[in-house]
Length: 167
Image (cartoon, rainbow, N blue to C red; front, side, top):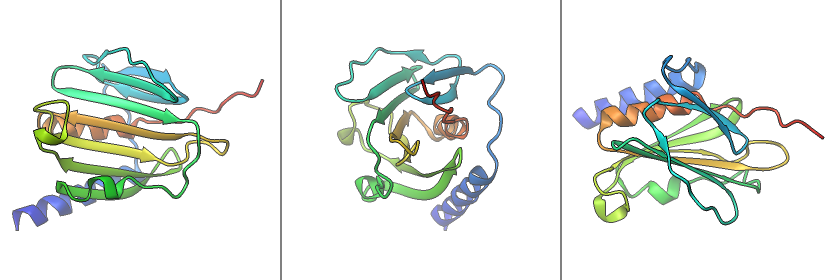
């Protein structure tokens, strides 16, 4: 019963999420990289990553690790749902991010599944097509607890895709 109530609350919050995207807390900082803009808590520190074929960003604060990956190709019908559906406390919500089709997945991962030990509360945002000309976005956020994972949802609410200027 308790699990069903949590799922109902989660789904209701994500329905609201899809309808209204609120302003970030005033102490958060704007990141504008990889053709994406979003806000993160001011205590998040960037960790340099050497990408191979995409634009990758990594931020962390000791309680949460965020990894963003933008690939150059379009995958309009793709989903990450099947990658996570066997995990504990799996939830999946289709939504819109800045007018683009998106999905948000949350799970409770085991340490055996993760390189980030103890950061088991996962939230994944996947946008299969950022722009008409290409690009898909995945943001993975792993946190120490549910409270910290809620901040991930706040980060997702701030994601925007600025217009790419033509030269």
